[in-house]
Image (cartoon, rainbow, N blue to C red; front, side, top):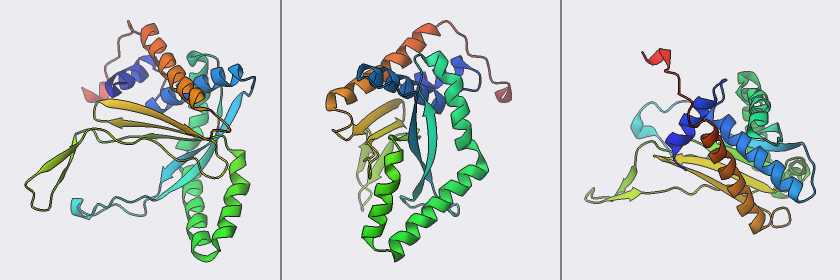
Length: 236
């Protein structure tokens, strides 16, 4: 999918629906359809959302490091039968993630617990905590903003450049979290990847879920094809 089209669609929907809300609505609506096909009438899913941990900004561009510090924020997303039904529900659920105090508390408290438990406690104790907590969650979900311009790497002599044409978009489900769903924009593309435990979703179900998400987004594009995007007054 093209990132520009996803961005334009979120604006056409209006009502303060963000790209995150749009994608989450498509995923939860897709899950609802897939669950029903498998005889599961669940009306919500408990998920964990990765949140980046930063204690300070890098002073200079040269100081930037490729770090992997993040924490997990729990949230419950309702399932819906249609995209239009999903939008207000997802927007309301997502508001919890945008609450600065809740976000700060969950992000840094979880990170501190993980960091110190791994430093002090034996690995077996940490593993037991993960195995105890994770059954409460069905899915890990992340919508990651990628580079907006092509990335390249140079050799040490700076005589050659190697351009990155894509990026891997997957997360490995940890503990008993069965599904990992991640979206990532990369320049002008938008990619969705689903990974899962075979005991929860088969390869065929994975492919179905991705197809359902794409189908729901395309159906919204068709429904709103004649809607004109209002000009942003702030950009005037």
